[in-house]
Length: 464
Ligand code: ARG
Picture 1 (cartoon, protein in one colour):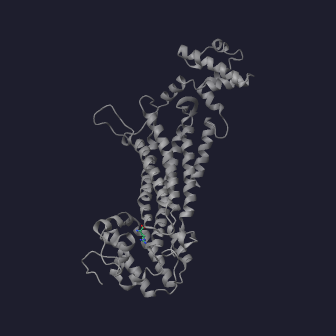
Picture 2: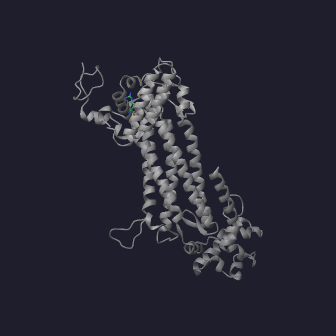
Picture 3: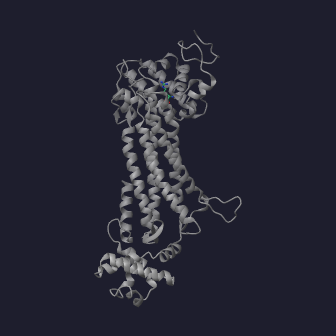
């Protein structure tokens, strides 16, 4: 029984009634999957070329399909394409338009293929591009951090443990810690890309196809490194999306930690840095405020990216083989993860060069926090005192400084000798912040010479 052209569509002659409006809206994905249109067309063209090469469709059909797809590309690019909810998703919308444009050749395109392997192919192509872009953006942010670290290779900053002043570090050294985190993020993406970059097409609905297809030719044309081995796995696997989201969650976690520090450093109670005005907002009621909105939002958006990872894991955990419609729910979290990452990385790469550092505030905090106490203990150890005794002697000296309201370096030689007779007048060299920094002079340490060497290594790695 044929449905009249203007009444709601049902799937095929097998169905006796169309879906309700609500079910149509509930089951459709075209509103969010249309952004894969380029990947869908690329995948279809590769499939069609393979079908023609294998003599499954004629050369005439292939050129009609190519002509139709060129026209569709133009229509979508110029926003003339009519996306229709009745046609459920990006795949059916494009196929329907192709058939309207080129007739039977359009209807032959789906030979030996299913939307199950088609959608898996499209997402992989889409994600591969997203990974490449994000990989580059991570590098841009690393570059910005390295440049700022270079400017501050000698600027002393209190290093914290338990959010208490611990030992002096250089601001450059501190920034390079984030460069390392982002480097591991880039490595994870590179590794994840290998598993994204495998071709599911040819698995058809789940069991493969009876047509003599050439999956390796399609893989080669689309730039896939390998072909998915098992047809059931090919259509149902979303590990690759989960892996990406896991890598993305770590990127955001790193950005969130950095954000937390920027927010803290910018608080007037700390005052170590200032952010450029264009990354901050004011308050509608308190005229004195300048709020670090961008880092705060990045910290907040980390929650949503972490949520997407858990969402995808939960999406998959109860699914039997092979494809289930549940999988349509993979796209929004995946797209939003990539979008959030892209925007966040771009904004941070733009914000970092404008960080205004306030070295006097950093130095004042070092003084208040007795940051060179460990240096004094190490000094006594080098003079022969067992470390635990040195620790106790310095603890008593610190207590005395607290009573007097001064820094350890401000105690006189006689004062210091009360805590240990081993103290000599060479002690003051180790009690200065500069002395403390310079003394940590080994691979991975905070001495300015080491920081400069680390910057060189990081730059070389970035340019590889
Ligand atoms: N829109 C679907 C998705 O995103 C495409 C695959 C549909 N396949 C099916 N057999 N219903 O997963």
